[in-house]
Structures are given as structure tokens and as C-alpha cells.
Image 1 (cartoon, one colour):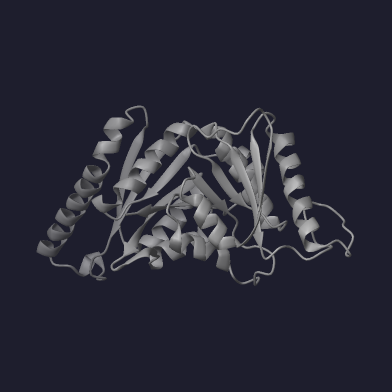
Image 2: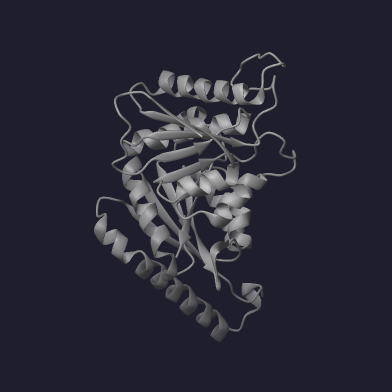
Length: 306
């Protein structure tokens, strides 16, 4: 394992490091750019990690043409050094630490994520199948992460600067998502953005015009109850962050579809992931979380719920 620091002074992480995995692929470059933005917002060290499987010789990425006789270990070092130069060009003064490890990529990112402020991965790496929207490394990290994980979806960080909505979107199930709600408020404050809280709920699929008047009244009562539930669930972090403008919305229907559609007008989506009962080392990545991780139109932050 190697650990080299570049940038301004000795590495320090007053708010925890931002960790990003790279392998020279285009999704990893986008993840690197986004991670650098996140480290800048947090005044944190950016740790760039390259782990097994190391890249094939001659396919280093970052726009470099390399000798196909180059050993994989040397190709890995070239990727890390190229990544450091890319960050330095875009964010002068940001401290960067480089780490090359023989661990499997998912294991290394999970390990480092235990003490990181944020871990960042791309949608797919080298060798990923074209139809696989989130690669196996990303899925493994998502299932086992002990800290917030960002999956970089949508346009790259540079392109999104001209398309910012100044909005953080929180997908809220109920009050058990308190940790995700707190992260969303913190993220909105960091970005100087508004926070939209979206809570969805289901009802019988009967056209409204076919419901008896008493049932329509019950539906209205349910809608008010769910609105109050959502407001209560975010009341404590709202008190802690009075400067964050909050809008609480509820919708009857499918949570996954609602969140994916709402992500079109957001800069980042925050969702919670709950531990499986009896399996403390794994997350319950349900269908809603899977859908958002695979189809959102902007980066997604997964917050583990203990």
C-alpha cells in the first residue's frame, strides 16, 4: 500500500476526508471531479484510491497514451499521479492524498469510508457491462458502507455548474430516516441551497372519480396525516439549521418514480439505507434505493441508518 500527499501542507481532515475510487475510466474521472468539489466544500483532504483490479497496461485513461508493455502496477501509479494533477489544475491548494492498495476496490472503499466524511464512486468502472448502470463495486460499497456514499450520476461536475438548481432533494420514508435528514440539511447549508423533502405514500389504485364521497374524505385525511408525519420527521434538523429554506412535499404513488422524476430539478438526492435485521454488516437496499441509485438524474448520497 502506498500513501502520498500532494498540495498545501500536511494532510489534515478537520471534517473527515473525502475518499474517491479511480481506475482511469470515464465514470471514475467524473467521480474524481465531483469528489474534488465535495472536498473543497468541506475544507477536507481528498484521498484518491486505486485498488484491485488494477488497470490493463496500455489503457490508463485520463487522456494518456501509454506503452502496452507498462506493468499494471506502474500504470496504476500513472493514473494516481494524473488524477492528482487534474485536481491541482482545477482546485489549487486542495490537499490530495494518494493511495494504491492490493485490496479489492470495494473492500478498500468500505474500509476508508468508516472514517470518511464522504466516499464517492462512479456508476461503472473498467470492465463493467454497458447495460449495468451501477457497477459491482458501487453496489458492494453501497451494501456495506458505514458512512455517507455518493454515487455520481447525471452530468459531470463541470457541466452541472451551468445547470445548478440550488436544491438538495431528500427522499423521506418516515422519522427513522433522521440521519439522512440531518445529512440533507447539512448538505443544503454547505451548498447554500434549498432543501426539498419528498415523502410518498400509497393508496388503493382506484380512479378518484369512482370513489364514494366518504372515501375521498378519507384520502384527504390520509394526505394531511402524511404531510404532518414528514414535517415532524424533519423538525429537529430544521431547528438546528434555521437558515436552510425547506419545502415539504408529499405524494401518493410510487416512491421510486417520484424521486427519480424529482431528481431532474435537484443537484443531489439524499436517501437513507437501513440495516438488515440480524445482519449488522449489510444494508437493506430496497427497490426504491436501487431505482434511485440506477436512474437518478443527479448524484445520489446514500446515508446508512444504524
